[in-house]
Image 1 (spheres, rainbow, N blue to C red):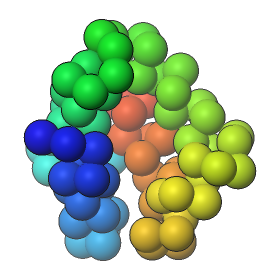
Image 2: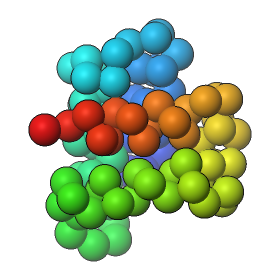
Image 3: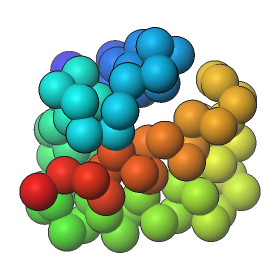
Image 4: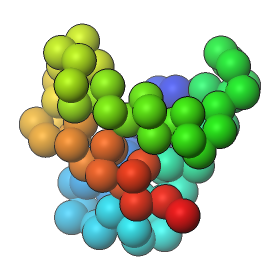
Length: 84
């Protein structure tokens, strides 16, 4: 899976108002981490949580997600932080 497909899973979960800890939202979290590990570097859960902080703090990342759907960056952040 690539990053775009992982983002689409987040868009689906967010657009359907699924809780951040729902199976679909957490599927998106796992797909996101797997895509980063496949294409960039090994991404642990802790690393992914650090990345999630940037998704709401760094305007470039925030614009990427919120450009898809307003509010998506916060949802992605919250879903990533909700994983166990």
